[in-house]
Amino acid sequence: MKDAISVLRECHIQPTPQRIAVVDYVLNTRAHPSADEVLEHARKKCPTVSRATVYNTLNLMVKKGLLKTQLLKEGTVFFDPNMGKHHHFIDNETGDIYDIPWDHLQITEKERLKGFEISEYQVIMRGRRKKK
Image 1 (cartoon, rainbow, N blue to C red):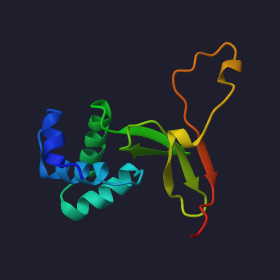
Image 2: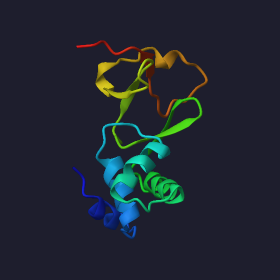
Image 3: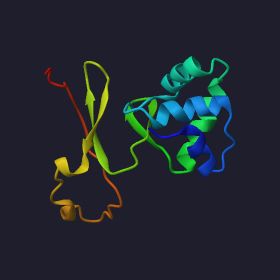
Image 4: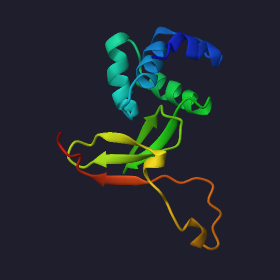
């Protein structure tokens, strides 16, 4: 678990109870929360946190390289604390988003895409997660 206060201080961001609640949730979840989901969880620890504080803190964390934004579903930006290379699987039934390790998929024939210089790519798969 990452300590929210330490993370904020390392990034030269003033720790406030509201920011701590946001950072604590988003950096210690395996989920890919939207800003509204972060707000819901942060308010459990700090009822005074505002929507503006959540958005401002999340955007600052993206700017500082602590989060990535992902547009995985139409119209919703998700915040991803996993900064390593990975792909995503979205369960069509539940809406849950799962990280897929980078080396579990192999993309071949990229060189055949003439006229494109690829700097980054990500596979987004959709389907249904099998029940165990």
